[in-house]
Image (cartoon, rainbow, N blue to C red; front, side):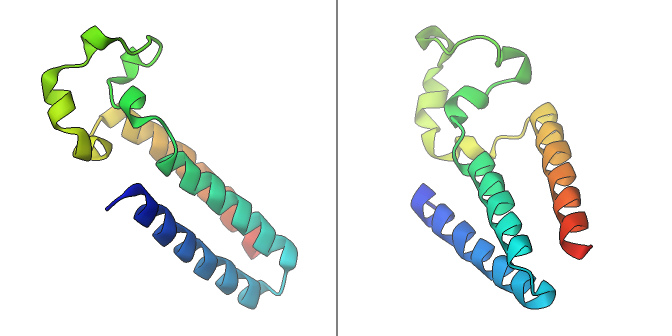
Length: 109
């Protein structure tokens, strides 16, 4: 799935969530908050430079150099987004869980 298709599907899902929030809460302000939280969430997944972040977390403070790119990385260009690193997954899970929790508390109250 290309980046354009992923962005399109994500924005369509966000539009459905916004409509559901609007119908269930009758609040334009909560719809706007849902829109901005959703855009931040989508951009946090689709916009980062995955070539930079697709390294071990301990390497994130160092710049990417040509010497650090292996031929295997170049050949595996299409599937770099789905490589599993436990620390990166934990960081994303904590940040997104906290954001989702705060959004849910706001929308339901």
